Length: 150
Ligand SMILES: [Zn+2]
Image (spheres, rainbow, N blue to C red):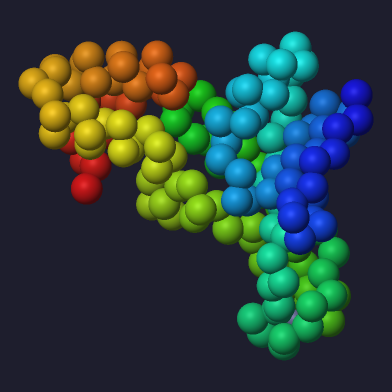
């Protein structure tokens, strides 16, 4: 299977190649589950940085792929962020995932906001909020994680 969907700026938004799903970091990780459901395939999810980033050390814009940083989101979703290496000075640049998850959190913004909203609007128990998150987002944050949301 070979799928390519482009952003309006011509960069690749969603690509499926040899059971690897490449996602632009402006696309949320729920696409991963949705595309696995649609294709019936198990896809490795790998984030790419399409922005015009430059080396913060030497200013060069010439990079090669160096490695993939593994991140475990919402307890059950493994994703990788592509790490690039500057061809000139060797400094690395990792694809930022901040569009959908905070640096210091293992739960995506979407999962956090549902917890905050339901906690605010209702008197549901923390266990039930977690259960609701499981139904909507396929993620089951613990009672403590729900309490820790800002
Ligand atoms: Zn450099």
